Length: 258
Image 1 (spheres, rainbow, N blue to C red):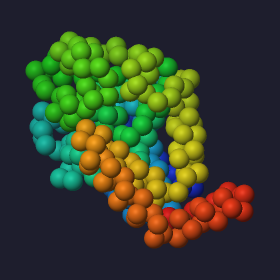
Image 2 (cartoon, rainbow, N blue to C red; image 1 turned 180 degrees about the vertical axis):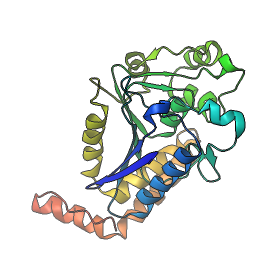
Image 3 (cartoon, rainbow, N blue to C red; image 1 turned 90 degrees about the vertical axis):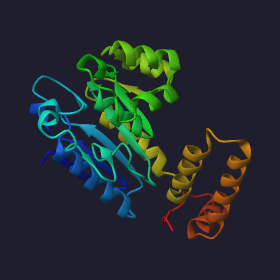
Image 4 (cartoon, rainbow, N blue to C red; image 1 turned 60 degrees about the horizontal axis):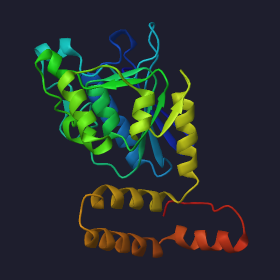
């Protein structure tokens, strides 16, 4: 299978599995990722997703971007109607997804990372949008998402030089990467981060994610309204009562996601 999906407790793990092609995206990868996201979104027991890449014979790699051989014969074949490139970059979601990046995430691989909510990267990971080197434009979100995540001048340099050497350390310095890991440990560290999220009420996590994504670049009045609407939604849930009861009884809450 070009994309593998595994459920571990409240975590859904998606693995791009094309090691012979450096985990590059083709049509099968795009539909596979979309299908895995469908499973995460539809399963009430899964609260957080992780997206990673299989290890290759030449070492770890997250994703080398678009499969250029496939692009030459079918330019639109590596995207889906709902998810766009990789079945993911334009996909509307309610649950957070963490990118677990071991090795390079280049071109469309970087754009997939930018579409995730958080990033864990090994110290050997690197990022870049080198499309200009092939007379292409980074059309899967890199040109507007990257300058939202890191300083605009740094993003501009990466876009116009096509540099492939934006290291995990530098990405961490500028805030693109949440946590650094040793080589081969990005997935395990990502599981730890996902586990911390899963300690919290899943409805509140999903609503908090939504408010942050939709209000950050908006006027304060929109942020106030969305935050107020968000907490009102929580008042009518079973987990709201559970959260208060657990606090009073000095125990860990048992979330139901409803």
